[in-house]
Amino acid sequence: MTPDLLEQGTQRIQERAQALRLNTASGGRAAGYGRLLAQAGEVDVAHGRILYLEDVNVSFDGFKAINHLSLDIAPGELRCIIGPNGAGKTTMMDIITGKTRPDSGQVFFGSTIDLLRYKEAEIAQLGIGRKFQKPTVFEHLTVFQNLELALKTDKGVKSSMFFRLDSAQSDRLAEVLHTIHLAGSVGRQAGNLSHGQKQWLEIGMLLMQGPKLLLLDEPVAGMTDEETARTAELFLSLKGKHSLMVVEHDMSFIRTISEIVTVLCDGAVLAQGTLDEVQADERVIEVYLGR
Ligand SMILES: Nc1ncnc2c1ncn2[C@@H]1O[C@H](COP(=O)(O)OP(=O)(O)OP(=O)(O)O)[C@@H](O)[C@H]1O
Image 1 (cartoon, rainbow, N blue to C red):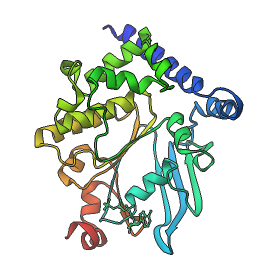
Image 2 (tube, helix red, strand yellow; image 1 turned 120 degrees about the vertical axis):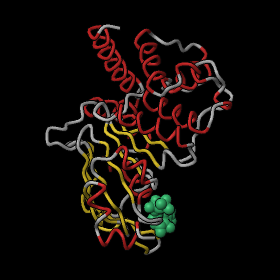
Image 3 (cartoon, rainbow, N blue to C red; image 1 turned 60 degrees about the horizontal axis):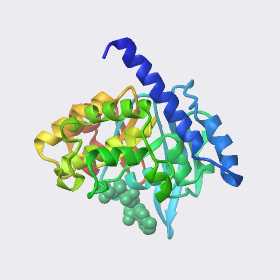
Image 4 (cartoon, helix red, strand yellow; image 1 turned 135 degrees about the vertical axis):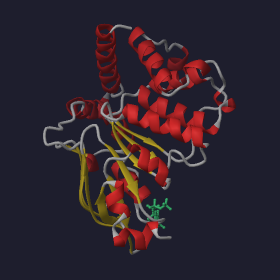
């Protein structure tokens, strides 16, 4: 494909993804959200931040899981988050995606979208995709069908039966297949893929929805060394087009992909910098790396 065609294809895909997001809201209260989401479709990153959390607090039965947490991420950045067990990494992702409501603080997507006003499903529609540690692909469906399914905004049986990809969606699917290294496995049943391939497929399903920000929780856990290396390539290829927040314990993987690393401990940022900088930090060595 020539660069011109590729650019045109990318533009069509973006327009289609935008239309898809708007089409998901229909009728009554949903139409109200449709208006909100339409405005929110443009994430304002003029201030250089696609995500920011400010002074966020969450307690579970009196235990402070998130403690005055402030953090921001630049558009197109690949941010790595590390920290000991119980540091609050998963809880932070739960807050960003609307699964957990903070007791106080601010969580913004761009400079205008207050994520605390939205529900979990709406936050996904706004362009924040989340990948949990375990792959959750549809094992009995093929790679192609899994990716196709990710585009269906109405999962009703009837609409699924009559769902057909348009040309922009077909282009996108082909592009995603290539990105996730599964172009040669398009007709394979997902249940027969390796663990690493299932993880890539699930990332592909998120990519089909055109996310602006991807949250990835321990993506290389259980992968072979080769799969881990290919996942690093994949993430580096996504950087710039998407913003990524990657929680991982595998330090050699972090070394391959990281620019800025944030160390969480006791629900707050303990240190932040390059991996070399945080690895040399005495406090980080004491609570995490020196184990
Ligand atoms: N729903 C909940 N109810 C009570 N306590 C919780 C709940 N969710 C999390 N916690 C507690 O909050 C703290 C932070 O947990 P969290 O899972 O966010 O840590 P983490 O950094 O993701 O850890 P890990 O690396 O082990 O996944 C832990 O002490 C955990 O037990």
